[in-house]
Length: 299
Image 1 (tube, helix red, strand yellow):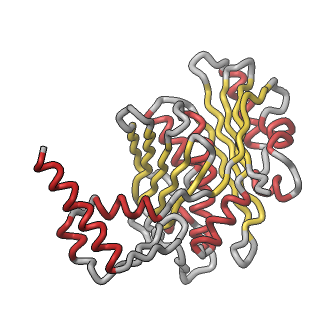
Image 2: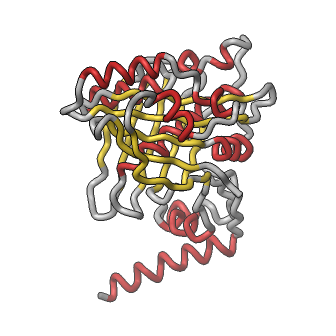
Image 3: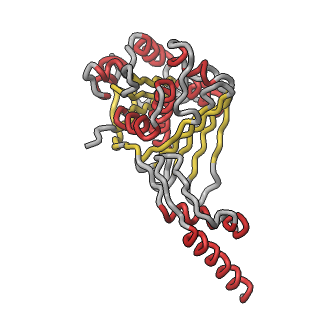
């Protein structure tokens, strides 16, 4: 049974809000589905943890948050989608990237290069909200903190950790985000900053057996009051289906479908599942478009 979960709550007499996530199994599933190299595993894991926590701000149960990173370096970037229900999926542009230097294979920021971070919130019935900032380090945690400072003027601390072995198997992964409310006491902010400076990497603590609650209590909010308001299980879940691909193919139009009459085998970016559309299937889709066109003309 999947044991990944996320929490959110308040601290310091409700002057700070926080999010935390354990995402070890989610990151491992992403690594396995995409056969990720070590550096691609690091990037994907950090983005999965971040997106899971950021999705707490989604209001509608059918809404989604997209976190997209694009860079001009060899790693190129990645995309992760998190639903309000706790489902996550994503892909890395260069999943099997291996660099010549062993040290460089763990330097995500260097491999991403210069680029952008984009955050998109999609909620039913509303226009999508998109915020974009430049990458400041490419190490993801610093970039998300910078995003909140620049786009929403919210002082934010972000910690994203992942520990992998030599085969890129995920031993532990997770993170936390702390945001300061406008009326927060600067002295409490100083206490939290001092605590964070003395907090070991979250993935190391998880690997030692600490749960999120232990980490928050013993390290992050040491000496402060804090409460958990909500919890939710998370998992890597792709909702692709043959029906979804069929609908996407219909959007291409009759001329484009006609060029595929020999059949196609599209592959899902998020889970690598392959779907087979035979010549007869393509012909059936073309006929459906023709039928729709005829009915439209008859009206």
